[in-house]
Length: 232
Image: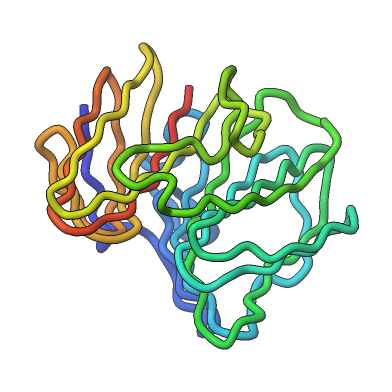
C-alpha cells in the first residue's frame, strides 16, 4: 500500500518566525488518521527565520532527528553540548530520562529542516546528542543510512529505536531501489524535486506512507533529494 499525502493537505501553522507543516498530529493540529506511522511519531517540515529559533525547552523518551535542508541550525543542551549542523547533515538527540535544549538559526538566511521524532525501544536511558556531516556526493544515485538503531548500520549516527533514516540525491532520470523487510513501514518525503515511487508521483514536501511493500523502485523526474524513515 502506498498512500500519497500531498503537502497542501498537511497540518501546519505560521508563527512569523516559524513556518511549519506537520505530517502527523502535532501541537494544535490533530487528525485521528495521522497520529503516527509505526514508531514514527512526528515529521515536521520547518522554515525558521534568521536569528530566531526554538529557545530552551525539555524533552524526554524520544529519539529526535534533525535533517537540515538549507541553512544551518545551532544546538545547545543541558549536557553542555553545542554544535552547528549544516544543510545535508544530520543531528540526533536521544532525550532519554530528560534533556533541555535549544535549536537556533544563528544564520543570516532562513533555515529549512525536517524534524523527525521516533519512539525509543526503551525509556529512561541517559540522554545524549550527536551530529555528523554526510556530504551529498556520498549519497548520489542511491540511499545511504544516516541514523539507525538497526544491526549493521555501523557508519550511521546511533539512535535507540528499531528504525533507520536514509537519504538519496538523484539526478533527473536516475533511479534507485530500497528493500523493505517484512512487517515494516516506510515514510518518505522528497525534500526537493519530483519522484515516482512504484508508480506514485510525489513532489517536494509530499508525504508517502508505505506498508505491505517489499521493494521500492524510486525514479527522479527532476533533480531530487529524498529522505526516508524505515520503522517497525
